[in-house]
Image 1: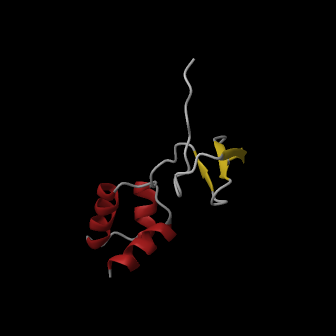
Image 2: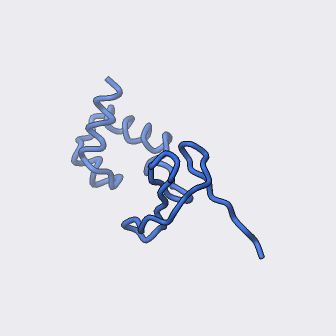
Image 3: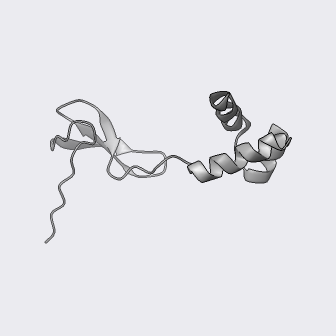
Length: 87
């Protein structure tokens, strides 16, 4: 039998209890030490740095934000936030 020990990603504590499910059905855990909740294996951000740079380069080539939304499937709000951060 294999035993897997899950630790808190914030405080490295081992006193975790199950705390419901996320929207996509993954297990949520609550740390009894720091009282923060987290997932067992969280996924990275939705867009890689390479994809973000490609979208911003397309914007600099005079593509509209709505056009970028249709072409790349990225939300207008997300593209607008990236543009504001870059300035």
